[in-house]
Length: 371
Image 1 (cartoon, rainbow, N blue to C red):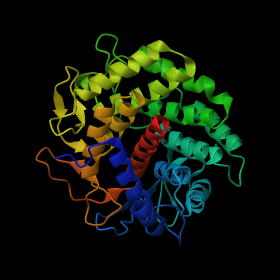
Image 2 (image 1 turned 45 degrees about the vertical axis):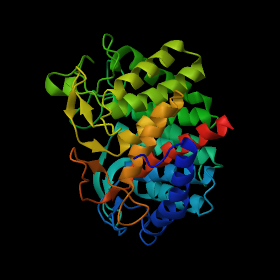
Image 3 (image 1 turned 120 degrees about the vertical axis):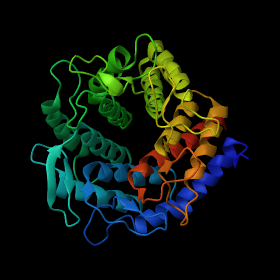
Image 4 (image 1 turned 135 degrees about the horizontal axis):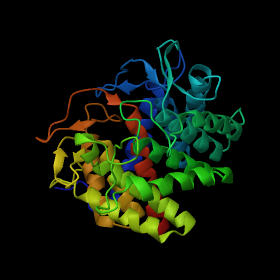
């Protein structure tokens, strides 16, 4: 039986969960008040789960707490966001303006390498903070330094090369588009060209010309990668790109982008099972490759449905996501749902909070526009 019968019911419940339980818990225990920065995870019992810290998580939590302020959380959102951003600049920022990958619990460098993905979230956090009224540093200037440093990660043929096992991929470009749109929405028009480049690359390269779905991995010529990697189609990323292409399409008045967003959404739905849960991955014939279901595709299903005005799908996604939040301690989440309906017993990753609060923010915006 569905938990929510209407989107209004869903918003009321998610808003209370967010403001009354999740945000206070992650401020109290998910922020390291002694050493600085934010933790990587809490257990599903609501206890700290110490681990080396990734640059991307600091940026995501800046976004989380700043967005919480925009949603009306009365807690110390700016103090929390500032805390994470201070730590980013002190321990993660390299001399070239890029954010390194990993530091220890006491802030010592463990991996001085950089990833495009991590820069995207540093930029997103800075954009959100700038849009919320600023910070002690000139954030547009800091973001410009990071963007300039990103040029060293350019692929000679198109876009960027990621620094992991899949150098030619769509995912890191998706988050650069997201960060660029956030800067544009914060009033900084000099991000237009980067946003346009990422969106155009999706239309020309990442989205399969025949199938209309978006692929994950490519070879050095930006053709589908060989083997299983090239055949991987993730429902969550169909939805996430759909949401972004909807935003960019409306911004630019581009019907081709809006059509692509609709097609991506429909392809993503091929990965939504009978429970209303979006699975991790499909093959490129849109049959199930990986039936396990992480939390984040559920949030992206909800965001894309709301962007396209698909209320029944948004409600299904809201009900599906709620399953992941039924943990022993309120305010945390399960990350992985097995095909048999049981959850993997592991800590709740802080990185998922970005996905959750973004979905709640989209639901809040959708409902406000309907009033």
